[in-house]
Amino acid sequence: QNLSKEHLVRLGLDDDISQRILDYKIKKVEKDFEFIEELFLIDGMTRDVYSALEPHVTIYRGNSLQVNINTAGENVLRAVTGNNILINSIFEYRKGPDEKDGTEDDGIFNNDNFSIVFGSFGITPGDILNYQAMFNVKSGFFRILANVSFSEDKKIIKRVISVAERSGKIYYWKEE
Image (cartoon, rainbow, N blue to C red):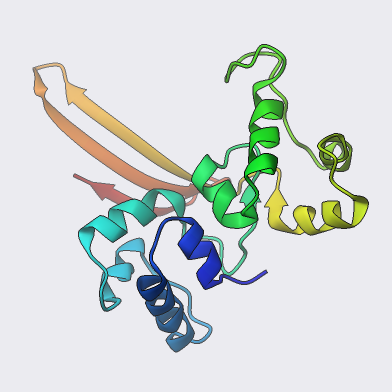
């Protein structure tokens, strides 16, 4: 599955900047984005547009649009599926019977139960295959955000943003 203007519009971007992002990506040919701030090289990119987009995208997994169905937020699920009813079903399953995140009864998608769970949502077998192509059930890259204050002066706060691979390799590190 390839990135489309429709995916970007579903994330809340307007048609014009969505098309400019795609044009920039096409101009790069096979070379991927090297760092997320590279988006500022796109004509029309503003701090507001970047801030709206940045929490929902990663540049560290190549051209794959597969997202982790167990961790993706609402905006990302909307961008990928465009189906609000399915998004609600995914969140209900993830919360489990007690309807609370982060408890022992939470539903976790895995390769063995994906078809069964999606079938329980009323999704047809053919469409289940399409959704399996959109999602994975395990992340390979992780964005780590940490806000740190020091014991001497609680007012001094340092923010660290990092992207690391499951193996521990760090791809990005920024201190603010």
